[in-house]
Image: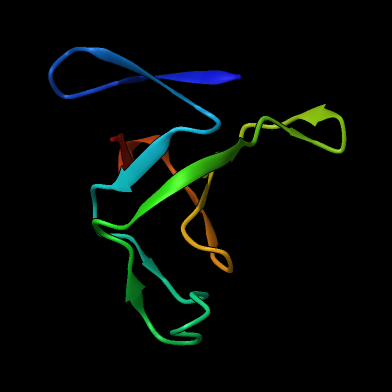
Length: 87
């Protein structure tokens, strides 16, 4: 499954599972394994899209944070399409 995203330049980019992405905006998380319980900014972090959430238990959902990105062996985060850019 792929999701089409409109980029600032007016060019459509399709994000799909397996794409390498970079976090282009400041996104603060508190569940990073090396910084548990502390604020950690993901800006400029690179990872791989491992899932695009469109279903839950066989039912369609409209997830607010549909892109599940793997940043390392132990860390994944759900993000919005406007927070990511394909590299």
